[in-house]
Image 1 (cartoon, rainbow, N blue to C red):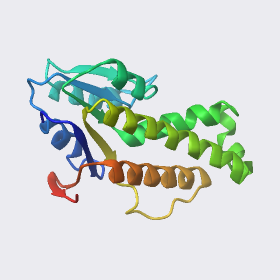
Image 2 (cartoon, rainbow, N blue to C red):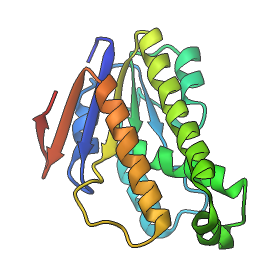
Image 3 (tube, helix red, strand yellow):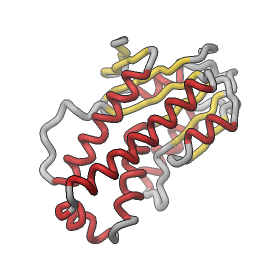
Length: 196
C-alpha cells in the first residue's frame, strides 16, 4: 500500500473480505497483522480456519494475536502498515470482558436482561472509546491501516437481547470506522465494490 491512511473492508461471512484486505499490502512490506479472534480453547474446525489464515500471510509480516491495547501497539511499533482482522471479534471480546467483570458465564443472559440502560450505555461507551483510541493512534502516527469487519445489518432482528445488543454495537462500530476511513470497500462473493 505504501501510504498512510485508513481503509475499511466490509463483507459477509466467507465473502473474500480478508483475502482482499491482505492483497492491499505487498508481501514484501513490513505489515503488522492484528488477529483479534483470540480463541482460548479452539476446536478442530477453528484451528483449521486459523491455519488457513496464517498460511496466506507473508513470512515478512509480524502477527499479533490480541484484541486489547491496539492503540498502544500502534503507538509503540512503527510498521509499513497494520491489518486488523477483524473488528467484530474485537468488539465481541471486549464486550464479554466487560460483562464478565459483572457476572459469571452462566448468568450472562440474566445479567443483560436485568441491566439498566445506564449499565448498557457504560459498556457501549467503553467499546466506542476503545475504537476511537485505535483510530486516533492510526491518524496521529500517520500509519497505513486496513480494518476488516463483517456487515451485520442485512439479516433479521436477533431474537435475544444479548444478540440485539451486540448487533447494535457492531453496527455503531462499523459506522465509526467507515466515517474515519479514507477508503471503504464492500466485498460480495470475492468481488470488492468501492463505497468511499
